[in-house]
Image 1 (cartoon, helix red, strand yellow):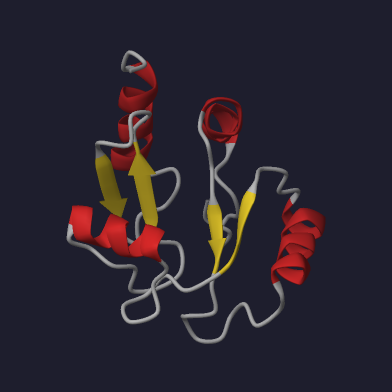
Image 2 (tube, one colour; image 1 turned 180 degrees about the vertical axis):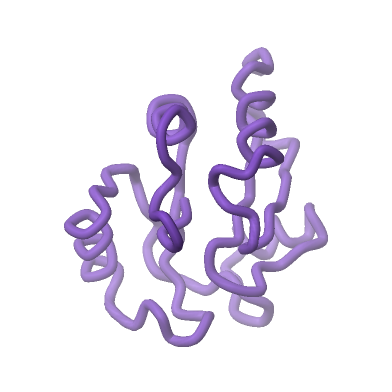
Amino acid sequence: MQFSGQGAAGGEHCQLLRIHAAIRRPRANDFGAQEPGSSREIANFCEINYGVSFPVFAKSGVSAGNANPFYAALAAKTGERPQWNFHKYLIDRSGDKVLSFRSAVAPEDRKLTEAIERMLAAPQP
């Protein structure tokens, strides 16, 4: 979920994400020391300032050389590592299909929202 520019994904797709998708926002201090607090401090900040109520990961690394095993596997599967905050990975229900969206792709971008809709419309494994 992206928290810059106009804020979190709005309108219909925000509802779609909150209701149907498992959203995981990692806590990492890999990019410009933007999240120096503890996992609890960062989660509280996001809840108070952005109304975030979905589950969040504990703070860990996501970039090359510092990536936890989950992010290392996502990078290996897609061939793309996060280069800055707001990199997005979209994983289908089976965990087999993984799409990568760079930081510049806004939550409202048609490529991203259509990919979310396609994955949600796919039959469950």
